[in-house]
Length: 276
Image (cartoon, rainbow, N blue to C red; front, side, top):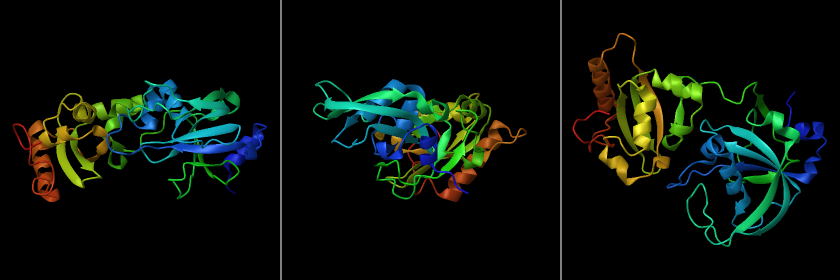
């Protein structure tokens, strides 16, 4: 029998008809950070992002806030009381998009601790209407998982798909595993449908190589004309313990040929070699 988020609200003495649920996800090109990455690194900045709106959208006394994670989950991050609204002043900058928000609606929101035990642990099925990011809390939202720990379990090397811009905000245990592992990876740009095959052969493994790309310090010339938020990265092959650096480079060339990433991708414009 499914359990719904409204049940959690009732258990905390909250009438679902007094609350809205909001799901923050911003995947537009050029964004400095995703809301999920901002929540992991700087909660106050994420809360400011939530307070800034183009128009009046919060019409109930309470907000149950969720963010879309790098794995596509809808993760609960906190309950907030709506105390009023005003206007964003001159000089205020959106912490996600990086542009001026002067004149926008600016809400006054106060954290409500009644659901703090679920923060970073509870995920729900938002449904197909992800563009409808503000909904009534009495709409049925099925709970998918309540974790013991805030940090989610590592999904496995071949299941991992993340935005390149979120590399520096990965859970610590994920970063450690990626630092310890070498192999071949794939970078794709959903907007342009381009792709790039690279190899992680250094001491910092996949994590170090992806961090270089995210910081515009990789060797792919084509990367430098776009923001890291436009790319997602995944792993094609994990190098076995017996593979030498030369073996990894051979494997990289094999994947480049398989995916034709020189002819139809970004491997055709590199500094130095044709690898990653």
